[in-house]
Length: 587
Image (cartoon, rainbow, N blue to C red; front, side):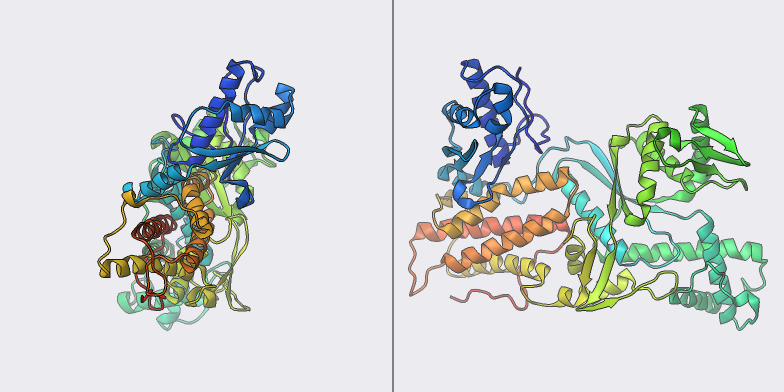
């Protein structure tokens, strides 16, 4: 038996040699197979095992739990298995030391020469360090934001936008072909109500009085409606006033929706997010896809006619209730277009994987969409739905309230204008999607170390400043040839993170958790600033340094700069070379 699975590795075509974890996992696997071949271990299937950095730095660079995972099947003690694995390791230049620890862990210390070459590699790959090929060229579509075009985007939309765009960057860096899509909900009853709301405000702007100027009970009361209606009154005069109401409402609904879509586009552009496709729901109705999906579900035996309506029998597929496909008045139900839309994604456009990012208020819809995929003979596992929790805006201790329909809205555009796109993109990713988050507008604007995006960008600017000072002193830029074994604790801590970084990217992409990038950026910034505090990089009158030390430390600075730039690019945040308050070295 020769099967082996490395937990969380999800590799394509063998071990990814850019990841230290994967190289070590390959060596551990070869040791186990060699021990089995020599009869030192029983010939049993190797279990899943991990190779991860230990919780304590003094335990080495990595540790593996294979010996403990193998103990039951091998009927041997974990410590005996661990000792056998160490003895069976193939000759290599990666591992300097392997030791049995605790109940059977194997602690691994990397060869300093190998580490030095890996640090050199960061500059040699010219900005690609951290990328991997686990996606194998497969096609994935990420659909996010997709707000109804009946009002401005709000802060929760900014969170969805930051999640979706960063996830797209992560998957591209992991070898996927990525397409970002915004689904425009330009069909349905809410648009009609939007049209009624615009008409009421338009008539009021025209000086009309009476019931016609009253916004419907479930209508939109936001100031943005009044502003748009006033603009229409000034531009079009009495055009809609003299028009038949049954013609005016749908026309104003379409015009208002287009106006809002352009505002949504502008907000996304202000955040630095560009969608590959803006897909119109109305196109599914115009093409007949919505009618066709009802017919397909009927042919597959998933439809029942009751009370004058057409029902999708999702209870037979595990849902808690059946859902209306066609209402008794002949209009499509809420989820009918959604099913047609996902059929279009998978079958018409041929995506291998689809990721939808929805607000947490759509949680009840997740099971129904999974059931829909099963009903049209698509593997539900190809569809991933990520739910993000609400955003609470604060200014320090004060909560900033918002209500889209009542007009007390805090628009995303206002947040972007107040704190800037970089702070928005970073802050919206500082919590996992399934966690509620507080967004402190005052903190996001603060130029201080407690503002995480400022701290990370400041650290990148510091690396650039150090290299610029070195250049001004006539020191050539560091190259891979300057790599040397690192021995100072500050150097070692920084190096360990840089070696581990490609694994962070791969795991964040595999687990669809882009918030890990902000954690990684802050950790790297902290390690670099500690290194810079404790390890002199450039010589001074008081601290002379030999040329080899200067150049090897400048290489670490340049490698840190490259990795900070890489992680910031994945988040969607700029990596400035200078900042107004950067503490630039002046030696």
